[in-house]
Image (cartoon, rainbow, N blue to C red; front, side, top):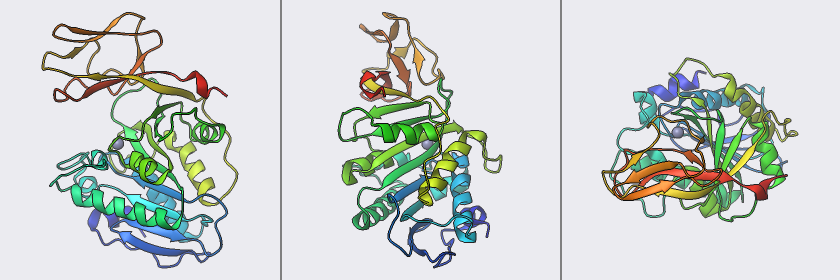
Length: 322
Ligand SMILES: [Zn+2]
């Protein structure tokens, strides 16, 4: 079976109803499958999503590889799984999205008439159905980055509580090759934040490697994460850390007030770029923002509409040191 080719061809890709080893497969929506092992779970249920952005194809290839291994019996699931291929229309068009960024449609009050809107609703319903059966799953939403980053592999961790990140989550991230994690609140309209907000999931958006064309292969950035996914699915011990993890928190948001807004760094500046203390970060008419000691910028984007966030300032989180 060439799942990737089937996903690119139509919404009707099918998996066998039963996998080697006896796990049951249920299709909850187009390219969304729930897999239930025959015996009681040996570990935490797991949601893996990829392709929420249609041009981020390496994670889609990773997830296709996992599905192939499950179908051949090379990988036998011992925990309940929800496997999600995100924006199928955008994937076929090799675009990030068609009308609306799918990863901005999971807010509490998102109303949209875009082609992405029904897909967001279908994915949300599948997660709700899965979480109704399996409390508190881990949700890993796999992306690849669209800009350079000082840390090639990093994660966003939307969380309802503001405490330090514990040792087990840190071990998980370091085993995936994640070099930096940014702790945020769970109010964001992203897929992973919705799982944290509504279902109390430990949830992450992974930014691994760089966007590349479909078929250009899965780069090494994903090898560590793929090893961890296989271990989680088979309820095997967590692989050893392959990265030194740094934990960051948001210190403030840069809100663009007017079209006069400009950043002092180029629009394509790398994520986690630092500043000298006191250096000007941005200005907007008479307003100026100056860097505090240790502040770095993530997701700089001066092109947003006035009123929206043009960048996120972050600082290391000393409370999460282990
Ligand atoms: Zn993405």
